[in-house]
Length: 313
Image (cartoon, rainbow, N blue to C red; front, side, top):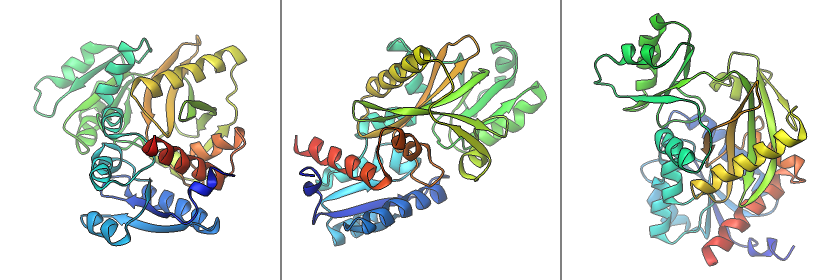
């Protein structure tokens, strides 16, 4: 209760929207956070982040910012750098950790250096000649083709035949200058929630499509959520340890969600760390937090308190 008093009377800016492909999801997350903070009696203002965000922050003069921006400025370290210059504490990871986590290639290299297992991958550029031939020689299909810096499975395709690579690459290149091509790992999709240095728990996602794509993530009824995951206790412990190691390897702070694949032999592959997890009613972090005893408002309070303590410490 004493910790919550840190928040009383403080002006809280909820930053959402932005200009990325995940704008609508971010607006929904931001509305959920803003509404919950108002219901809990806090002084919170919703700010739709556009080019005038600096002026709007100056006008409101918040004492802390709750970042719910997905992709683009929100997760690449840009908004974090601006807030640091303005002297405004903010939730989530810092500039460097945000930038590294947003770049799938950098993330994979950091994971590998930290002893984590990642799917075999290669990187391609838009002007590269012979890219399709290189992918075919990289390994047998299916191939996972994804932008190097996007979230929410935007621009991701699973390709079963070489004839489908051209369309998949064009789709991925719409969202960045590099693409990542991964081997396809058959197994369970498990997501682990982290808060600071605490593992909150995990969820197994079972999409009613081939993989957990944008539609499956944000359309009610398109995915079944198994809490906790239906894996044996020792494997669950290993998954939790892997997720925390991934979170710390990138230097993340605040609340994150770590995406893993566990194959049929029980091997755990680290995919990525989401430094600003979704906060919609279908989002995974709030679902996971319930396992650890956090209601939605309490989760938000804990995230804000963590940010203030890090800023003051």
